[in-house]
Image 1 (spheres, rainbow, N blue to C red):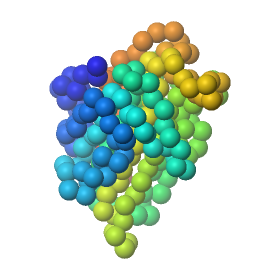
Image 2 (cartoon, rainbow, N blue to C red):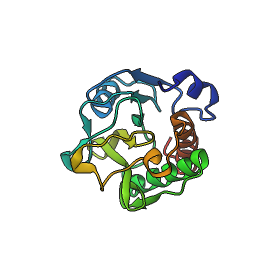
Image 3 (tube, rainbow, N blue to C red):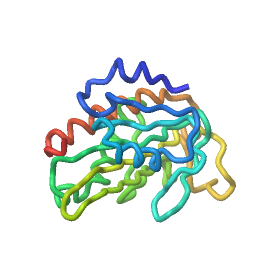
Image 4 (cartoon, rainbow, N blue to C red):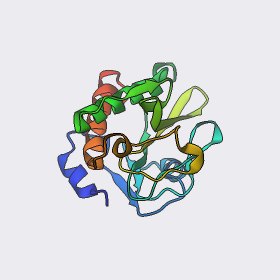
Length: 196
């Protein structure tokens, strides 16, 4: 079980990840995050689950994640910047995640632009970025991330295409460490760019 209290205790960020909404099981963190964003939940809130039954990927695809083994979450941000200033945000998120994986696990991953995290030409993660606007104003930004950390069972159609850190390196990794590093790195980026 992912240790939420441990994450909160060790976070260096001031906004991102300070509020974590955890579900043992949920259809989609992205859908739930959208509901919560519409109710003006705290900026930087993370919706995370151990078992996402109907995860959303890009282009309307489903995102598969083995129960209790991986990282599946959506972050809610209320940006202070303009829409144009979020150009290329998905790649920046991917860069923060590859850096977080390296810091936490000492593993080098690649980015397949714009939104895939790769190891050995196989996908270990994906990013779904949704900017919700009203006219020219950003209402909120949803950042959905799935990272295959310790999962080893994949549907037949994903074998040879998808992998996990554990499948590639034959060891367990601490999911909390990756999430912690990501939150800290991404908040630093957001502050530098005056997004939050």
